[in-house]
Length: 230
Image 1 (cartoon, helix red, strand yellow):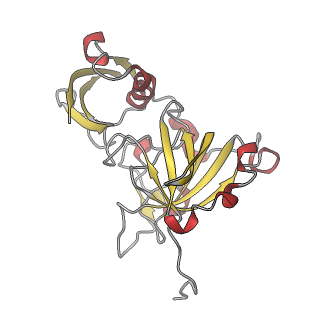
Image 2 (tube, helix red, strand yellow):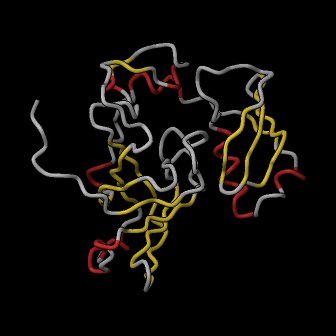
């Protein structure tokens, strides 16, 4: 087996509201109100490295599925949006369980803030990465080459209409800072349950920022039942 002749370097880490995998949107851009920051590692904090980046609205992030490393791989996987019970070829999916655990995400660049301590910090929205995920590269999104209006989405197109109706009691929602309301509602609409779990009586929970969000799902309606500080 041919080996890569050079090591990949972690150039940055993302700081998001998801300390664990559970609850993270399954693709970038599905929850556009989600905010995150990309902080470069000390060796890459030279402001010259991002000169001109402020002129782009979106970025490509190439990153490492650091929480999904495996020593083996399978030629087929179970995509969540097919219910977790149908197998597709790994290269026809974006599953993290791949021969090389690399992720690709398109995010919006909101602003760049220059810090004396941390160098240039990229503020982005719509990311689907766990907190502290290693970033291997940042590239500008180019609309004139990266957009393909006639693109076909294969089996994934049949699973687009899965958004849930969310009931979030006001007294629970107001426990969170107002600036987090929209992002959390977008995350819940995407149905954060594991695809193989459809128990209407079960209470699910995940960590968002510094809160545990507990909910149940019955007939396409997600109801938040508890919000607890962590």
